[in-house]
Amino acid sequence: MSYFGGSETSLQIMRYVAIRIIVLSVFVANISTLLFLNNAKTLSIIAISCTLVVIVAGGVLAHYGFANIELGYLISANMAAGLSTLCVGV
Image (cartoon, rainbow, N blue to C red; front, side, top):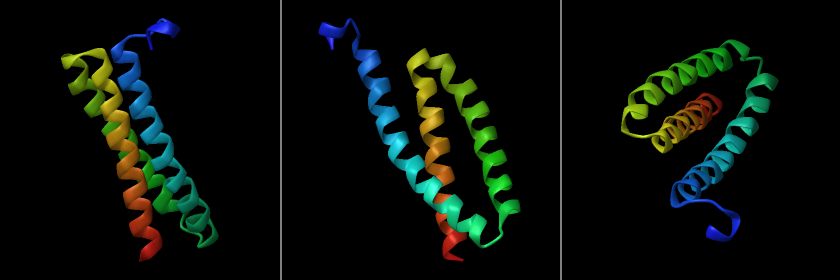
């Protein structure tokens, strides 16, 4: 990473981003299924709850360092994928 001018913190953030992209692809697949089943209200509830998680977790984790804010986004993405998978399965 030093070749590109980044630090260990940058590498850690990129790892979290890579995981989040994989998890969000599951969420996008579930979105198409839920829209096909005409459950737009469920999607809006999931989106609002995940937004609240990002706000609260990001605010709390920001006190422990800038790089930890990314964990709030990761938690929110996992929650979105998990809840949408549960809604598709039900």
